[in-house]
Structures are given as structure tokens and as C-alpha cells.
Length: 384
Image 1 (cartoon, helix red, strand yellow):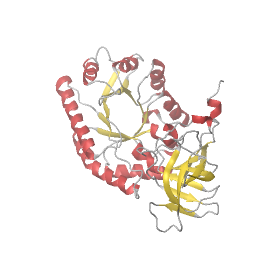
Image 2: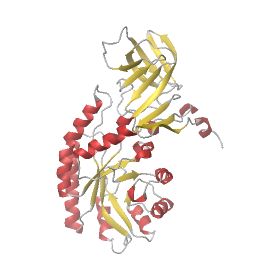
Image 3: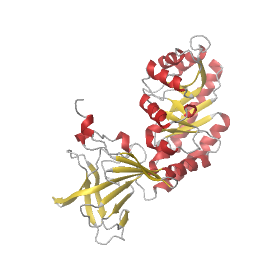
Image 4: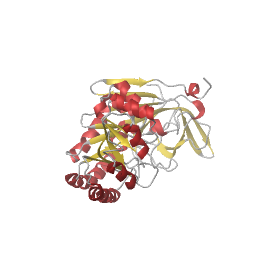
């Protein structure tokens, strides 16, 4: 593989999805594809839906032949043309973020299943009063809408305490809707945002502990209401690896610098704190010697402290401020783990017009496959 590049392990993605399902066997699961659309190549069967949040994401699903009945079309700033395309494709459910969205769906003159997104105190979703207005006028002003439920999401990387507070708030909303509007949902789509670890020595064990802690509260809620969960980060984070090659080595002011062909425009770990924390990391030397790097690893002989920097013209382009590695050479490859969620889409890939990384996926069934070659970003940053 020519670096910089990502490789996403589809078998690991499936294992993670199955692990979540095993903890919550009776709760339908939705994968939010904004975390990583390349994982749609082999979508695990345990997912009832995928959440699509933009016209571009819908285009991706259509290009891959994702069945419309598996799509929940969400996201803010929907225009009439966007809603029309979704309805024409036959998406299963449309999320209304506002009364305007509800009117746009109604204007299609086709019966459409919708869920109403309720705000958690930011620009996303609608107020409870707006939701009640839509529900109370579903037989006249919004008669093309089949309002099957509500959607609620308040953020990511949540502890059990925050999830419990969300569920308490959700229950109050559901009681209010029943008492004031006679509305009982067929679906309560909730994004629990279960905490995902990036920097501890055994990240998977931390993740599973967070899942096992949250599952009883979610299962208990699902016994009383038709809960469905939607997540992206927790499903995808563990399946990605980023590969970058050492291109230069130098020492300045007693600091050893490794200059690599990747950079901050390719990696974006949640909560990395100015590159002070070390994610799962490995080194593959040119002679194929492989080192799995662990903090304060006493097995390394004569380790050297390095600062790993990328290829951008900014002092902010630091991947790791300090990490002890075996003696490095130009051409050695560094492997950054747990970048299966968001890195390839949230990092500023167009900065400095460096090539965008290639994308690979691998699975036991199909082996390794290249999905995208390097993209010449300069062509995107110039006049057409």
C-alpha cells in the first residue's frame, strides 16, 4: 500500500456491531454513515437501518445499491429537491428537523413515514411545542405524514450518568406527548453516544466496559418504549488503521523529529489534546520487523524519544509530541490505530493541496481491496 492511506477492517466492524447487538438483542440498531461511509461495502446484517444526513450521503447509498427500506434520511438544511430525491428513492423514514421540513415532506403528496427530531438545546431538532403542533395537525396540515416516532441525540462520548439523564428527559417528553396529544410512538430513535476509548493501553476492553455499563439502562427503557439506537463512532472507531511513511529525520533544540507523509489533515482523534496522548501505534521497519508501541515499554532496546510531525506548513501539524520508538529510518512505516470513525472525513484534507489518502478495506471473505486511489487535492483547490 502506498502511503498515506487508510485501511478499514470490515470483519472488525462486523464484530463490533455484533458485540453491541449481543448486549441489546431486542433493540433495533442504526449505523450513522457519517462516521465512515466506506464501511457500507459490507454492511453487517445486524443493522436495521443506516442513517444518512445529507444529499451526498444519499448519493453514496444509491451508488452502492443500499436498499431504500434500510435508510433513515436525517440532517439539517433539507431543500425541496433533496426531500424529493429521498421520497422518489423510497427511503424508509425521513427525519424532520423543523416544521419547514415537515411541510417539504408533506408537499411531495405521497404518504411518508417520518420521525420528529427534538432538540437537546442546540441548532439541531425542533422544540417540543413545534413537535406538538405537527402532531396535532397531522390530519389536516400534514396529512401526508405518517408520524411514527421521535429522534433524540445530545452528543457523543457519554458516560452512563449522561445517558440516564437523556432517558429521563426522553420519558418526560413521551409522557407529555401522550397526555397532551394522545401520541404514542412506534419508534424512539436515540443516539446514546457510548464512550469510545482512544488512548488507554487496552482500548477494546474499555469500550466493552462502557457498553456493558450502558446496556442495562437502555434495555430497561426499551421494555417500556419502542427504543432504537443510532451510533457511528462506537461501531466504527476500532476498525481503522492509518499508514504513513517516515520521509525525513532531524534533530533541533534537542528534539528528534520524524517527518511523515501524513499529518493532522488525515488524523483527527476525539480528545487528542494537542497530540499529547498516544493512540494505538505500531512501527513496521523496512526489513518487515514489527513493533507494537506501548507507553513506557521496557522491551524496547535503546528507545529514542521522537516528535512525529506531518507534511503541512503549520506548527500545528504534530501527530505526537513525544513517543519512545526504536531507532527510526527514512522509509519506515508508522501505523495509527482506531481511526475508523471520522478521521478520513473530519480532518482538513484539502489544506496545502497535499494528495488525499488512498482507501483500502479488508475482510476474510474478500481479502484486501482498494476503494479509492490517492486524490490530487490541487485539482479541488483551483479554478475549473
